[in-house]
Image (cartoon, rainbow, N blue to C red; front, top):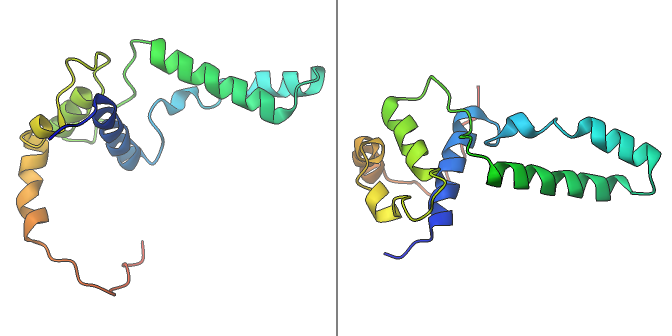
Length: 128
């Protein structure tokens, strides 16, 4: 089973986003608000251009930092470990998808997932 290390990275990001209802590294979201305001009011750049530049700057900051995103305390130790493995900076030491399938975080939940059957045409339950 061939997988790309970036796919494993994305799995970690997705689990974090589900657990927190925010994208990973969301602490950088508002960091450029003042820059956007100033550049759009004091320069010839459009807001779209400034926002794009700030997004590129945020991606660069995330990609070049050694920081891990915040992992919520309410997650199990297995979940935290799984996320940390997925988000290892060095892709050559990041586990493959096949290796992650053996991780306790997935193995604990896999029997329930494997034994459930999906019914067709059943509307989703409303959220509380």
